[in-house]
Amino acid sequence: DGVVPEPGMVITEDTTLRPGIYDFSSGQGLIIGADDIVLDGSGAVLIGPGSLDLGPASFKGTAVYSDGHSGVTVKNLSAKGFQTGLHVKNGEEWTITGNNFSDNYTNPDYGWGDGEIFSAVLLESVHDSVISHNRGNNVWNGLHLRHSNRNEVKFNDFSHTSNVSLKMWNASENVISDNNFSY
Image (cartoon, rainbow, N blue to C red; front, side, top):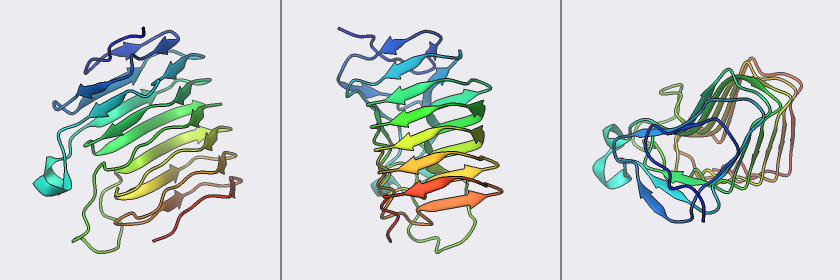
C-alpha cells in the first residue's frame, strides 16, 4: 500500500509513499503544500538526474521542497541525484528524521569555499525544529542552516562532503549534539 510518488506532486495531507525506486529524472521533486502533515517515505527512493559520473552540472532540482509551512514531519525517505535533498523555507516545528539525502549535488574538484548553497538538507528561516537520524554523504554541504534558530540537531551523519558538513549562516541558539560532521 501507499501512494506512488510522482514528480511535481503536492502533498497536502498525511501521506505514506509506496516503497520502491522512482524516476525523478526531470529534477522536479515533491512539494509540501500544507501545515501539520506527515510525509512518510516508507523506504521510497527518489532518483534525480545527477550523478558524480555525469558531473556536477547533471544534478537538477530539489527532491522535497516547502515554503511557508509548519508542523510538518518528513521521515523514512531517500533521494539522490538532485541539487538539494530537502529544502525548507519559512517554517517552524518541523521534524526531519530517518531520511537519507546522500549522493546529491557534489563537486569534489571545486575546492573549499562558499560555492553553491546546495545541501543534503537546507533550512532557511526554519525555527524550533528537530533534525535527527538523517544521512547526507557525498554531497556539497551536509546540513545548511540559514537564518534558522532554536533547532535541535542530533544523531545525524552528514559526513564525507565536498564542501562542509555543517554550515550555519545567521543561525543561533541551535543545539547540536551526537552528529558525525567529519571530513
